[in-house]
Length: 171
Image (tube, rainbow, N blue to C red; front, side):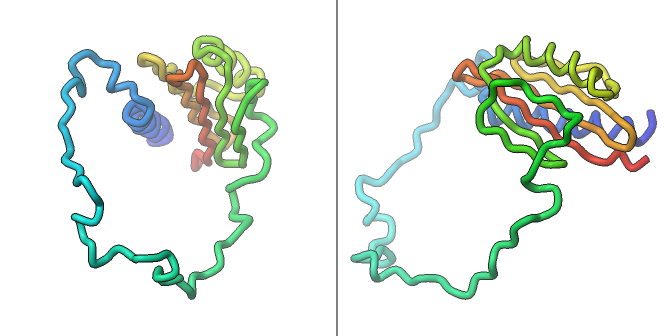
C-alpha cells in the first residue's frame, strides 16, 4: 500500500474514533458507560477557596497587552471549493478551501447516498471503500493533487452532520 493511500485511511480512522467519542456513539453501546461515578460538589463555592473569590466584579484585574488576533488566515473562512457539493437546505455552513462543515435535516442514509453520487459527478474518485459504523460514515476521495475526507454522522436531534476536510495529497 503506497504512502498516499495509507494517510487517508489513517486520518479516516482517527476521525471515526474522534466522532464516536464526541457524538455519543460510544454511549449507545450496551454496557459501555452505564455506571455513573458521582462527583462531590461542595454546597457553596466559597468552601473551595474563599480567599480567591472577588467580592465585586470591579475587583477583577483586566488583562492587557494581548496581541491582536490575525484575520484572513490562509485556508480559514471564505468560500468552499466549487467542486465540493453541499446538501441544500443546510444550517451552520462553514466553508473554506480546507474545511466544509454543516448540519442538515436530510436523513443520514440519504446524505451518504448524496455524497457517493455527487462527489463522482464533480470529478472526484473514490480513494477507498466507505467505512460505516452505526450512524457514522467516512468517505475518502481524490481529485488531481487533492484529497477529501468526508465524515457524515447522525446526530441525537434527528439531523445529519457533515464535515469535509480537503488537503493536498503530496503527489
